[in-house]
Every structure is written in C-alpha cells, then in structure tokens.
Length: 114
Ligand code: DGP
Image (tube, rainbow, N blue to C red; front, side):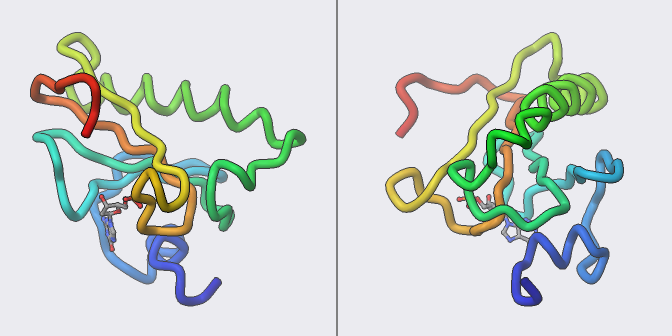
C-alpha cells in the first residue's frame, strides 16, 4: 500500500511526533487535533478497517488496550479522562483507510457524539 499515508508514517517516510512504538504498533499525534491531547494508534501492518481484523489477530485488542493505557498515562490524561474512537467506514466518517484508534483527552466531551 505505497499510497497509504499511515503506512508512510509507520515506515518513517513522513515525519510526525511519535508517542509510542513497538514492532507491531505506532502511536503519533493527529495532524488535525480535536482536543488538547489527540493521537492515533495504528498497527504497522496495513489493515483497512476494524472489519478486516481477522479472528486470529485477536491478540490485537489486548495489546491495543495496553498501549492506550500507557500512552494515556504518558500524555497526562489517565486521571482526568479520555475518549477512544474507532471510525469504521463511511457512516462513521473514516477518512483514512488504515485502521486507527483515536485517543482524545484534555477537555470534557459531550455524549451522544455528533
Ligand atoms: P478518521 O476520520 O477516523 O479516518 O481520522 C483520520 C485522522 O487522521 C484525522 O483526525 C486526521 C489524521 N491524519 C490524516 N492525515 C494525517 C497525517 O498525514 N499525519 C497525521 N499525523 N495525522 C493525519
């Protein structure tokens, strides 16, 4: 997926502020922040949407939760609170077709979401 912007970020072809990285995942600041803290966690492997995560990859969920917890602490929103968003496909407004988890914090969020 040479034209995928998030693959390029994962491969360091595009410079961005990285908050976390391991062999499988990378977390970086969202370019269009919707809150004082807004970053994205992505698998380095190109997976288009949550629908495309195979059952054999269910280790994903556990790992991602652990990264969320770690990075929320690192960015200072663990205690004040934060919101996790995964937009999947058109109705949810997914713009980048490379699975990503939004982590937002540093302000109060309303519910229901818009
Ligand atoms: P979504 O609507 O869930 O697909 O959100 C995609 C997010 O990705 C959006 O909040 C903006 C962010 N984004 C798009 N392109 C770039 C980029 O080149 N760099 C960074 N850091 N974030 C990007």
